[in-house]
Image 1: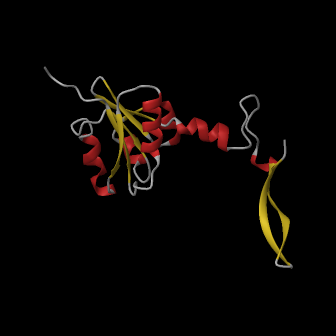
Image 2: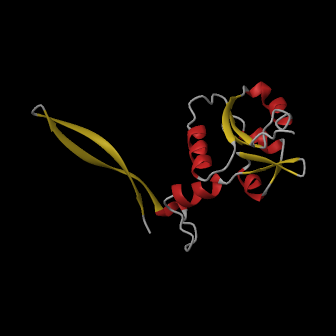
Image 3: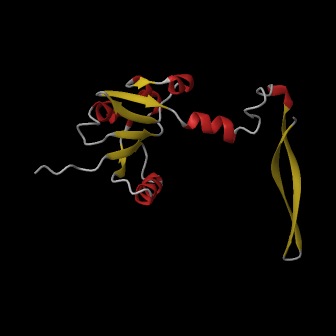
Length: 157
């Protein structure tokens, strides 16, 4: 009887030890009842090409890629339109023995992080985004007034 190992994926970066990705992935694997694992692989830039070309031999079914490897991950894989559009790949998987890539966070970054983007409205021209204004916050601690500048981005709709 042959025992099969659960699928294993990894985060590849340099440095990478600070990542919380394994905590997040393991939570969802457990919560959804999916057998599998997720580990960190700290791979120096000079070793990245070899690591990726041997990813499946190392037992991985896929990987997430972080800096400084995203551009080389794109070059070493078959990218989809999203990865090509941003010129970088951060998600790798095998399909029919070929290493494929995408960049799903591109969509999230544009729609969620960019305050000027809304799916029902054309992108705002740069002239409509004003420079941050400074508002003054005053705090009275120990009977003294201290001021600090807090940048407040302002978007004209």
